[in-house]
Length: 141
Image 1 (cartoon, rainbow, N blue to C red):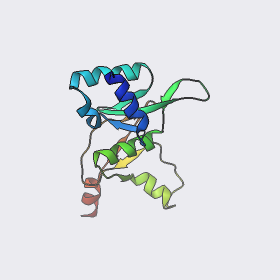
Image 2: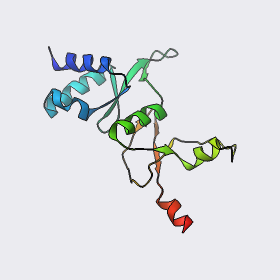
Image 3: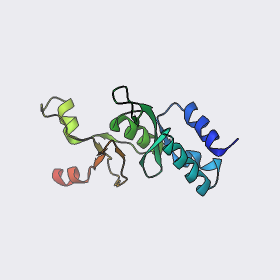
Image 4: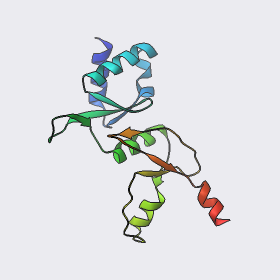
């Protein structure tokens, strides 16, 4: 069985819409895995949303185009969970959810706590914006 077929079977059997390259690393060498992942991207099975992060795809019911199987928010949340990074809602979303403001958050902002993260995750032209608790600690002092 070809590596591409094994990858395709592995992608279809997963519960999550996000696949990390690290999860597939034991299937083949790095160069073979890169070629197989490129092939699946060209066929529209996977979409690269970040370095080493791939999302399953589906057909749009409106346009028929290949789109990611989820929104930026759901895919990024799944990716961070798989990478072991705990994120919470950003300050603007937190204020909106607690009804302190009626202003809707304009972007998906992930609060990473005391971690500094610069990893770019992008879906459909939108990318994750990061904030952390370092600025909040300075303001409280």
